Image 1 (tube, rainbow, N blue to C red):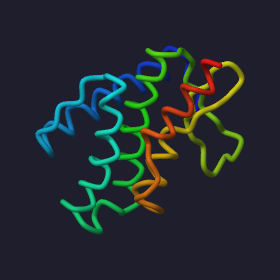
Image 2 (tube, rainbow, N blue to C red):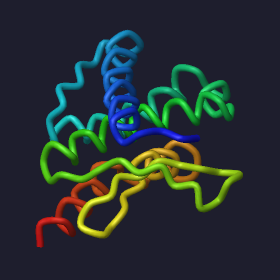
Image 3 (tube, one colour):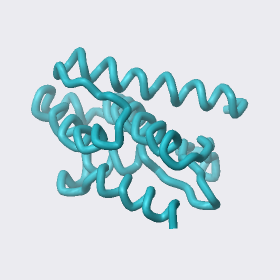
Length: 137
């Protein structure tokens, strides 16, 4: 997929906005683009499973949820620390988007996936805090 940096930035900003609107519509929870709101993402991801059961774990739903919430967390990281979205096509069968900052990449959608699908003990907020810590040293 050929995308300019500007198009990729717009896609991720739109995805983050989608997370805000969807969370308000589905759960009446306000996401305010603050670092504190990232802790809410941990709860919201599990709320999707509570509300929709197995439907929330279907491939397309997982893909969408992880990408919009990953974009939301990544946009906050960009506002706090900086960085640029990158489209990684190193595996053509499974391209993905990461946030790159100071030579490191952060897979915010990936950590959302881990919490949603593999282990509800994994914390998006802890990953975010670690990423910020690693970037400000």
